[in-house]
Length: 301
Image 1 (tube, one colour):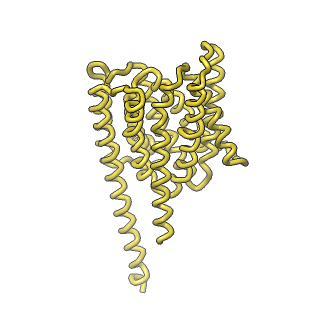
Image 2: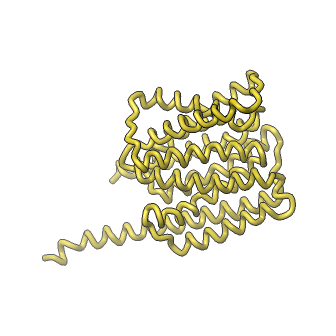
Image 3: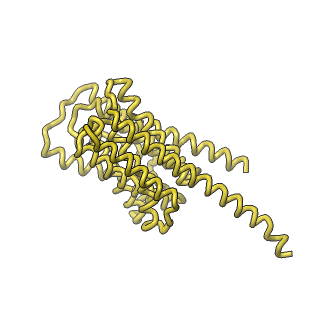
């Protein structure tokens, strides 16, 4: 039991590290003066090489779960980069973080898990938070960028669901496939767009994005998600939207708009509340189950 608690604690730390790495995206993407597809190609090409160096002998089964997670992650990355380049970092990350609620809803159809009351209430709260982004000046962002961020939340939910399907396998291969797909698509599209201006600052930022922000994050995520429940995982990586706009504000001074701030608070509180209620119920059900199993030999005798 002690070993189990230790692994659980390490899993929490790994997912907290994942959130920290992911939160660097807004800042370093802003530092690269390239079009979104050039950024996506550079980041994913480096991340794929980084992960292949770690895994060495990847096992590609090309199962529905492996491909589903890969395509969901690839779509999320490209949409998120586009959102970061066309709206504020706060809008991009906070609108994306309706994903845990979408996970509960889509999980009912894909994983056959029935959403609870808190999921539906949380969805309504997230929808209310999103509405705030479209009041007035949309929190300083743009309609297209905000819409891309919302869609990236849905694709991220699909990524999370298909990763959960692989909790007994090796989810890292899905991340490698995702980066290969993203790099290939982005390279083809980039051929029809102006060549990016190469600079030391841009190359350094792309290197950090590929290795630390998305590469190392994939290692932490794949390791940590095996040791904590899905609900706990969603709650922990919810630290990302708290840090993301903070780094951008501290380094380049981009202030999130009042509407974005208010909408973000509503979304974060909804995500935390739903995750906490679900986690509490799961722990309670686990204790009840253990109690019943403990009494079974006496009732049989």
